[in-house]
Length: 355
Image 1: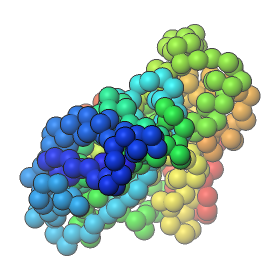
Image 2: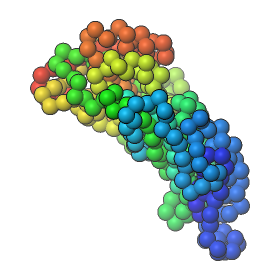
Image 3: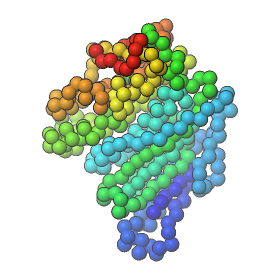
Image 4: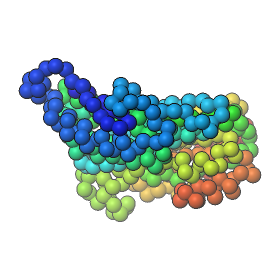
């Protein structure tokens, strides 16, 4: 069964199979109807002045902002990976949707794009109306925080594909930027400064390794307290992926390039924002690596290079800026309560070197 929703209300479509036979096949229409009712108000709460289209349509609609000259649309699709397994095992679903939105916002922020619309996709073995509503509440909360409409979405019930109690979550984001303001990395020059922005934890990457260490190697469960961290395993692993939009958007004209530090860590992601002939030198002593990463490295017996290849290591976003802009960039981040550090510089050559 598919539940599809648009800006103001939700309609779902199913086959003509009788409800009792469909339930025997693993699809519960009544649960779908209850989920529909819970989601409707959440979707409506994200409507913005750009929202357009009929209620219950097959596609969500949004206007391009009139104040953007020579508009370029920027799109991205992503998921939260195996962090959904942590959320499911902890039976805590109210933040995973916010993780998804913030991850996608950061991906298009790299190109200086303003987010204007979002759609999500939730695939489940069987519909738990409360869990689905909690997931969408997180998505809606993330959308409202960025003045972005949740233009549509789908909940797909597929009992033969997913294990009971588990689900997958993905999202699509649409943003807009003036063509002349879009960032591609071509403005970067040797001597530019790297400003690193603090992460709030693992964000949405590296969970396959983190879960193996915490649950398989150490034998902990979600409620286990981790003395080194002063918190439970669930709390440590489910911290919300930070959005950097508020910390960066006001100084975008002064930025030469940006990088979202996701899977692949600093080496794998910063290199995507560097033009040919430019490399990066990073001094890893310029910031304090958060205790969560130290715990995973020591207790999991993970090498330093692998840690930096898999995890963000406390740096969730990087701005590449001319030296004259560093103070303004860091002041803007401070105003958004995001700690920053000067972590290195752009050098001639290729690749990212960790010192």
